Length: 399
Ligand SMILES: [Zn+2]
Image 1: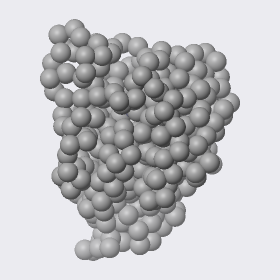
Image 2: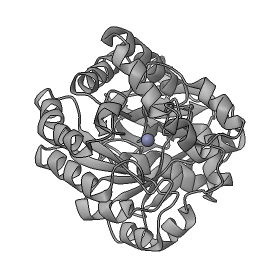
Image 3: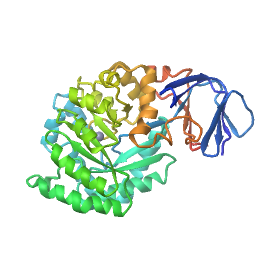
Image 4: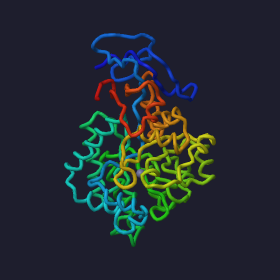
């Protein structure tokens, strides 16, 4: 067990008193076993100390929106999109999520778990120490439970904190396309109770979007999940505004995610609530779109924002949070420090973990990244590069 990280260069952390990020210089982060003890002005020496040698140190990223439980990649669709086909056109021709459902239902659970643990290791490589992982490519009782069990066993293999989300309402499976109400009933009466009974998820998510789940279907599924003890998060207002953000507020969800098409009323609703606006600029980028979530208007209205990857094989094939910071600075017009705040404190808040991780406050998990650079602006500035020097998870060096 490390005693801490010493000889810091610049460091940053959320400050709950000022409700802003603090930027400090020098000293040490002293650990109390797996937690942060204090940030001290002293520099220590000895084999139990990790020496940052003057490098920039941050909290580990909290990636609050990922879809790592997939069986096969979809690079052919990537090529088609490059040739001008839209995500929706590809989905209508049997690609998209339906393509992933086919392969997920076939893959053996142990193989799926191995793939997910490889991906969890890659998250750590890029400085993510806590992540949310969704099911949602099974869309049947057996395949959704398989996905969540595979996520659970993969999480036990890798030193990263994983929070699990049941996303049986990611799409309608082909066999229920003509009788949607029956699938909603399967979700609420069988799948959610089975997931809770097996202790396989902390949250339930619904893809509330035109052509996917209507607001009233979303409400019914989310209420059933809350009744069973799961917290709710929503895919909301991604391509078309259907009132998803307002519905997230009505439901008391932890987070409303995407929001590229959020309405003015949706912005006001989020701003007056505790629901985190989770922005996923990697998806806008990877889909080749130019409709970016209105991050500045959300911030100016007073909403709390998070940044996450939306790592998934269709609409965003990266798990690198540093690149998400770059996109947030260029296209969402966040300052680098606002982007860091959203990717650490904001992500933790979106997971209901803002008293646990995402910050270097005393008592928080000792989750830190040492960077091969001098200051926080350089991480988004050196884009599409990996500047991670070391990763510490719960007080142990894991990279
Ligand atoms: Zn998603």
